Amino acid sequence: MKIEVWSDFVCPFCYIGKRHLEEAIKDRSDIEIEFHSYELDATAPEKYEGKMEDYFADHKGMGTEQAQAMIHQVTQMANDAGLNYHYDAIQHGNTLKPHRLFQFAKEQGKGNEFMELAKKAYFIEGKWLNDDDFLVHLATTIGLDEERTREVLASDAYLEAVRSDQTQAAQIGIQGVPFFIFDEQYGVSGAQPVELFKQVLAEVDAKKLD
Image (cartoon, rainbow, N blue to C red; front, side):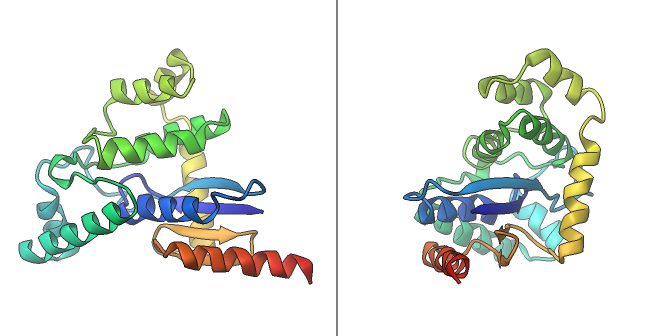
């Protein structure tokens, strides 16, 4: 079975949804997961100077109290999924560059590893994902060539691959992430509970037996 996932590094529900899916498939050895790029905010600056509640207030039309309440709720959801988000340490910014590097990693068979480490770096470790030196560190950690990584970062390499993923998302009708497609048949939107993912898996399995 193949599961395709459209995701952004800075999407809090994407990381939570990833953990829920992983829990649902932990006893399965017949599943391939393929991640696709999706920019939640292509207009975001390279580095946002301010707190995340300010970003949500500025870009989502929320009041400060509403933004703080949302952050608290999301942090609790993450905790329930075994993730320790640190919103006070997050360094927000545009994600095009890390998505380009993700596409390079994916080409080398390391896309899923890159996706995990980049999400962890952003939400848990407070890393800025547009820092070239950090991205090189991330890439070499998973076995990518340092020189080639720096060449990718210094160019527009893999931009078309990112755009292709986003075009495909638009054609499918994806308007938000995470979005999961099971065997090109079942679409699931959002960080759904583990049990729902298990239910979808069972439905896909049953259909194969028909």
